Length: 310
Ligand code: NAP
Image (spheres, rainbow, N blue to C red):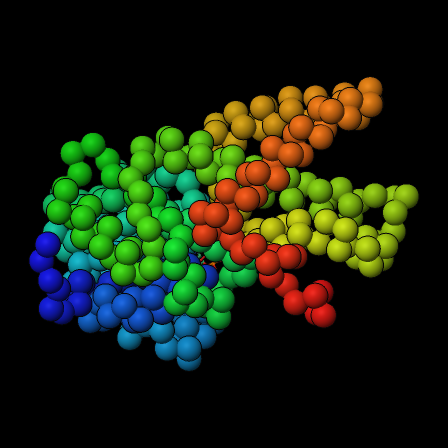
């Protein structure tokens, strides 16, 4: 193993400086992973705010300026515009540079970005599995990736040294790294993230449309379980619209299975099959225990919320 003497990258360009882009900038600074961090985002208001916070060394209106001479370029916008952004920056990408992304889906990113990648640029898609329901540059913080997994989905024939360098980068940001096939990534994330978000959006939508229960009752008695769904259902609408439009196949596959299981539960309730309900709830409790044992959540009651400040 070689010991690093300077920063891992000379210049990192972050295209999009919301929750994930800003958190990466903070984590890069914390880990001294780059000599220069250049940022770009499309709106002047967001650019101004990012400059005020100051997590990038330079903020650029022109994405071509941001990526010029960068040895690591990261797409951190919503997935739906990755293709456009990649097409725009392609002429300024430096030969030998690594182009990666943080998108929550991977097959569609390979489809949309792949065709724009110039020869000599290493395109290695990625997805840090870490987030909050907040968005924008103020939401970013250095610890977001600590202990969380980052999945890389290199294409067949990808440059091994470039993949290793990107792995080292994410480890420097605090992540654990796993390599996966893009299609498998999309199926895994459909069950662990995308469908749960859809269920949260749906139940919060249903509650707000109910006629027999008033909106104020829903809010007043939310601590009964509903409140935890509202945290997820407060996630960024643009990002999540793009996730569902771009992981259609895997989401529909998991939703089909989910609907069958839900029907089975409906039947168990209708026919008073208490053992079936009890067995399932016992199994699901064990899943929660495994997540805590794996260090992916806190064992504190109420997700660690202060009981005095619900
Ligand atoms: P976010 O907080 O809403 O930030 C998105 C950023 O992209 C903003 O700075 C936005 O800036 C910019 N942007 C949007 N369209 C653009 C365009 N055409 N050109 C340049 N900049 C543009 O979203 P986020 O949570 O950081 O998510 C970013 C990416 O990370 C998404 O692809 C998402 O799938 C992925 N991801 C998210 C999470 C999560 O939990 N949030 C977790 C893992 C991965 P303006 O204000 O200038 O439009």
